[in-house]
Image 1 (spheres, rainbow, N blue to C red):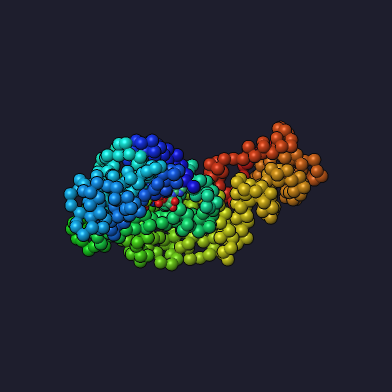
Image 2: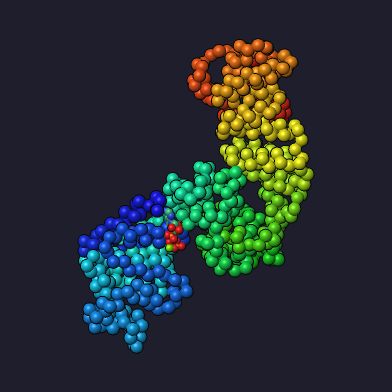
Length: 566
Ligand SMILES: Nc1ncnc2c1ncn2[C@@H]1O[C@H](COP(=O)(O)OP(=O)(O)OP(=O)(O)O)[C@@H](O)[C@H]1O
Ligand SMILES: [Mg+2]
C-alpha cells in the first residue's frame, strides 16, 4: 500500500497510457535514498495491465562493468534479436556477450536496443524500468538514453529512477519524489504501530517524511518510545541504512569533524574541538576536514553553524561512532562551551552517576522552563535524575521532569516518569502524596476522570480532596462527592485555602454537616450533562496551571481552580 503518492503515480500512469496508444515516452523519478522511487515504479508497472515489463537495476559493484545493465534488461527478449537488421543485431549481440567480437560503434547499438524494445512491445506495449540509474554502467546508460530520446511512435514507456542529482540527460520529464506529506507519513506509521499523534509528528519532522526512514526508525524504537511513554532517542536510530556508506567513506579527519558536529552544531567550538582531538595546533587539518565534509554533501555551513543535510545523516554518524569516542568528543566540547551546552556535554561525557553534572542539568532545565521550553526542561530533568546518585533527590527530579513533560504536552512520558519516581526507595510520604496528586491531575486533565477520583481520594489534604471532588463531579459520581465532602468537613473550619468545584458544594451543602470553611456554591449553570461540560470547560489551561505548579510552595499552596466561591 502506497501512501500519499497520487500525483507522482498519476504522472507515471500518464506516460504509460500514452505509450500504449503509440506515443512512447520516458520519465525520471528523482529523490533521495528511501524516498519511495522503486515503490512507485513497482506500483506503476503493476497497474500497466497487459503491458510487458522489463527491468534493470543499477548495482554499485557492477557500475564499472560495461553493458551489465543492458544485459539485465534485454536478456528476457534476446529471442527477438533475429528480427533486427544485421548491423543492429550484431551490435546488440556483441554488447550482451553473445558474439566473439567486442562491441563497436555506439550508433548501431543504440538503434539495436530501440529496435529490440520495439519488438518486445508487441502486442500490448512495454514498460521498461531502469532503477538506481546512478549505478548503471556508462555503456548501458548511453545506449538506453539514446533509445529514450527516440521513443516517438513506439509503444514503450521508459521509466528511470535515480538518487540525488545524478544526471539523466535528454529525458524531459522529471518527477521529484520528496518526503511524504505529513498526514500520509503518519498513516504509514500507524499502519504498523499504534503511535500517538505527538510521536508521529516528531518522527515525521525528523525524517522529512522519508518512508524508508520512517519504517527503519519505527522498527528500532521501544514500545514505550512508540507509545510516547518514553522520549525519543536523540539522534533517532536508523540513519546508517540510508547514509552509512557515505559516512564510512569520509577520511579520518572529516569523520571526526562529523562526529563533533553531530553533538555540537556551533562551528567555532566544533572546529576547535576537532583540532584539539587531531592534535592539530594550527587548525589547518580541522579546516581541511570541514572542506571535505562540505564537498561530500553530507553537511554544509548555515551561517555560523554546521548543519547536516538530513537529520538521518546525523543519526548515521552517531551510529558509526563508538560510545567511548563520543564521550571523548563531549569531554573536549565541555571545556570549550558554557551554559546549557556545557551541561549537556558534561552529561554526554559522564560515566555513571555524578551529582555535579546532574546539578548543572537541573540549572539548564530551570533556564529552559523560564523560556517556556517545557519539553527541553523535561529532557534535562530526566537525564539529571539518571545522573543523580541519591534516590531521594532522584525521585524529586523525576517528579519535576514529569511535570515538565506534562506541561510540554507529553502525557505518556509524564506518567512513566511519575511511575519511575514512585518506585524509588527515596520517595517519602509527602513526595508520594505529591506524586499521587500529580497523577490524579494528569488523569483528570488528559486521561480517565474515574481513575483520577480513585487516585486523588487516596490523599486526605483539602487540596487532594478538592481535586478528587472535581474529578467526581466530572464523571457524575455522586456517592464519591458526598463521601469527599464529608471527609473535607472533618477539617477544621477556616483551614481551607482551596476553592471547591461548584457541584461539590451543591452535593455537600445539602448533606448533614458543614462542607468546608463556610463557602457557598453560586448555584449558577445547568445541572446534569450541561454541568459536566461546564466543569470541564472551566479547567485551567496548561499554561495557567504551569504558572502555579512551578511556584515555590505549590505543594501546600491554594489550588485556585475556579468553580466555587470560597
Ligand atoms: N508511499 C509509500 N507508502 C508506504 N510505503 C512506502 C512508500 N514509499 C516507499 N515505501 C516503502 O519505503 C521503503 C523504501 O522505498 P523504496 O525502496 O521505494 O525507496 P527508494 O527511493 O527506491 O530508495 P533507494 O534510493 O535506496 O533505492 C520500502 O520499504 C517501500 O515499500
Ligand atoms: Mg530504489
